[in-house]
Length: 182
Ligand code: FES
Image: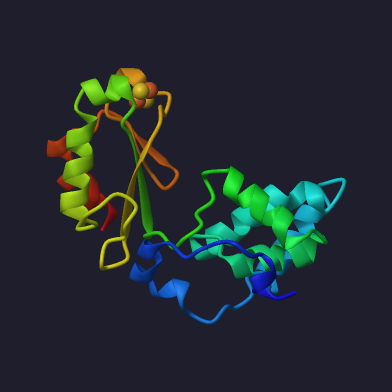
């Protein structure tokens, strides 16, 4: 199945900031990763039921889920590319464009906004050199986005760096936070 059968996914402008969006596609599910998928499939009643974790593997390996990745998963799980695309576009945790090594999510919902979340965002954009929300820093290390409530309203401003949850971030703490990721 060819990637164009997925159809309709326009490359966002910010994709041009990452060479990964333009490199030839190499299958994700080879070697140990294919064996991981095979083992995963033994734990689900149908191949379709394993779609979310299969996509998660793609994102873990590539940091995003490209159209080609959707087609690969569709082939392996005997689904249509359109079905897989529908799932990927429904869940915001799947990245549809390349992101930095460190994907930083900042809660800017009202309670955190009142406590200065916008200033944390500005500090992150400045110190990562990402410049704008959703863009990846020129060194490919950081992407910063705003998100809705992270469930830590009493610990403004909460920030997630990949899977790590960090509470009470202030603009002053941002340089140390980033240095720790170096
Ligand atoms: S409003 Fe920010 S964590 Fe709930």
